[in-house]
Length: 219
Image 1 (cartoon, rainbow, N blue to C red):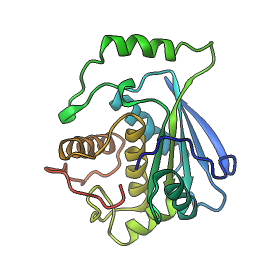
Image 2 (cartoon, rainbow, N blue to C red; image 1 turned 135 degrees about the vertical axis):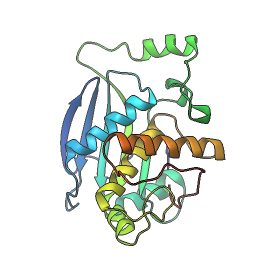
Image 3 (tube, rainbow, N blue to C red; image 1 turned 90 degrees about the horizontal axis):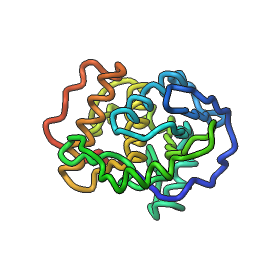
């Protein structure tokens, strides 16, 4: 799911590691008590692959927060107007126009006027980066969904909790880059992009590329 305001719940709690994978800095925060099921560097590599695939402008930073159901539930209510929890929430800081178009899953050229405006937006003093947004993932829910065989893009894939966590992270990062799944064509393109990214980072070797989009519950 995608929101449009930065999260406000306990944003300073936890330990943060800044991982530099040029031209991006990926700030991975782990909330207290959240199990470490994947290394921060592995998560950062998946995020970097996603930013590259989505044509994210750089240099830039992005925040990845590994949390639990309680925080996701509170944010889901406060920022999405929804009841109950969810597995991932995204808070993009830039509009979809900041990224290349991706209709039907194909990358295109940005409008030259948009490019010019973005150059101004990203014209920061040396050493500073534009912040693309924040992605908050419930590690707790990733583990449960994997254990129950309710993982993957269709909610019925049987794989590990690590693979589920990587998918949710990729999914949330794509949302910060202007991707969505409100329409069938958009959903099919987004699912296919997620599959390609997971393949590129060794997310799941046996995962078959989706032939058609399927609703994935909370995603």
